[in-house]
Image (cartoon, rainbow, N blue to C red; front, side, top):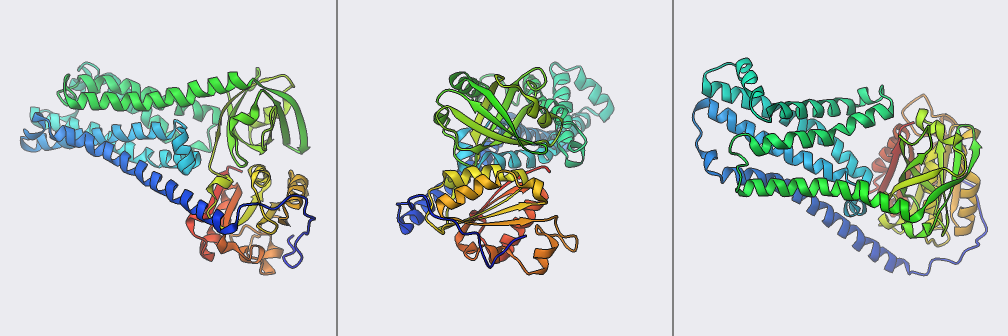
Length: 478
């Protein structure tokens, strides 16, 4: 339950922030504008890459000799294939965890865009295959079945069909209704097939017909795109994490139960402060034990790493995470990251509003620890269904006391009378985000918790008039 009339008061134990408010506001606005400009530029470059691919084909001599309906169908199929392949490479770049992309709009947003491209790319690939089959068949005077059999006898075409089949499997497995029924490990293995789909489709691009004939600008352009996309994957998904892991030598030094199904994993390593982790960020952790080595876990830091210590806090949300509570001290740990824009670096407004539910407390607690605050600048709302969900609340209260922040708590199951993020009692009392955060419109709102719950908080913030660039959301599956 929340008491909006009497906020929790805390003694001040830290010096106030030294940067004047107006100076901080101008600095944050400049940073936001730079990120926005970079976001626009990256989006423009992605579409330009597809436009250049089509333009190079249109500039080639063979694209102008269109004869009959078969020629039109064939050309439409070629264009669909070029755009689809370009977008597949864009998807790979978005999933490559490139630091520029992460700093610009965050890895979560990048993956969301990556997922949103899946269906359009699949439709374009299916159109590519269907239109070419119909076009070749119309030009040759044969039916689609005969033409399909003929295409299978063409060098490298069986690989093209295999690549299409793999991509269909990846997209279907990523549908929400399907993914919820698959163990994470099975989904992850299927998703890795996207790399195989890209690789097995390349030979037919280079050998089929004259679209990418040897010695043409088109061929050079596509090879460059493939090298760029796969190179970024190789560097940032494999090489950099390997170097980070070897350099910092992270090991488990303790596993501390803090609530039923929730543990804090204490880690030790070398120069962990040089990871550059900011409060609110997460890493992708792999624990090298017999039962956990094959499962990577995206988990937030629950405290800002020190010189030789770090900590993450994990809730049992499935078979993979449940095994982490049984890890013994001494286990070797590899790390990808840190990632994420759920940090003070993304701030744009003078005040700070933090809302956390359940295990969503972990990035919020670390963010509060890592932010230079004046007394009264930040307000924190902690949300739990019951007393057992008050993970790290005492630590967060101590940090609020140190920074002079206001702290509220709201406990109880969500109301059933309507879709809301609050318990029934607080809903009836007329509690709103604006009553908890009187300066909400002048605040950056950071929300972390289960997906359905956090979406409801963000919906209310938008209805209250909070600008989109002031809303920062971290969601996880409950």
